[in-house]
Image 1: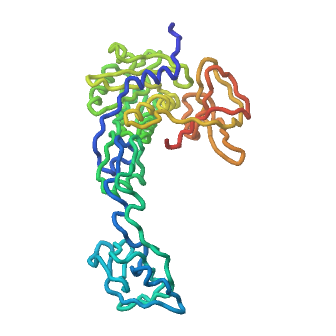
Image 2 (image 1 turned 180 degrees about the horizontal axis):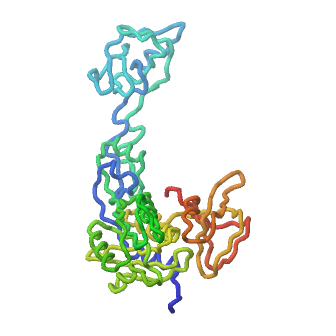
Image 3 (image 1 turned 180 degrees about the vertical axis):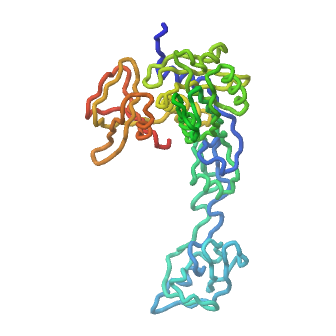
Length: 410
């Protein structure tokens, strides 16, 4: 049937079944921020790698200072000084003290560090007026990380703290998958670049910026291509030029039922791109397939900005994350109390723009704006999508609804 619609789940399954994660390779640490580790990383050394001082002070043998107090201080000869990275004195005898800086290795024969504040900071001889605990201010080798400890599990998305740990154990690289290259193509003879003057029937191209920004935020490298007019040959030429640098191509516009739907007209004869309707609102007209010698995935999204953005969230984002080896592929949902009633068409999964927040009353979500797929102002004012199932036509205020937060990392 011409009007038969596929489900959101079936369309996503079609997409993910065609996507294979990009090959992994060792990458410099700073290049892997936000990427998923493609290996288990085991500590090659201990942290700390040697016993070192946690304070500026004096390294001593604990039994020599057991009785130290302000009334009966202990005096010890200072036989040397050790700075961090400048260790020359490796051992000391009982009954002596060594001036030591934070991070410097504790010499053999010492087991405790007395901080400067408990001494007279003597140079040839030090007066100690307070007794420390045994082992005080000594960071023991391996107390943080032991050699052979599992530091990073395969699939961990690497953040600043992970990279700091990897660098601390001497790792200069970590295996990970590269950032996918996502090419964004906007079609439409009516489109103009921001900053140009508009004619009476022209509009600015917001979609390519919207989609390129969404791709970059997902961790991809986004290439925004200039506007392509409603001419099949011009579109195919632009596509052919871009495939050399694309892991994914995303188009917006030209996939509906009109006379100037250039994307469908250009790609349908290839036979490798599916076009049809998905049971969702907005975003019903969709297309997906593989093009070119390398069978590059192409997503043909609707031209209305809200439809294009929600289609990106539902279908392109999971594909980008699969290419990167990140799980889960799709954004997690949560539940919240609906503040105002909403209606929804039967048989369609509706995505309603909303403002999600958590306060003393718990999570709640406020519908934002109307249902029109052209209302980008309402989209910009939203931070979540309210998901209304296909078999629900109305939801009352106060009911719990499924919510898809849009601004949370996962």
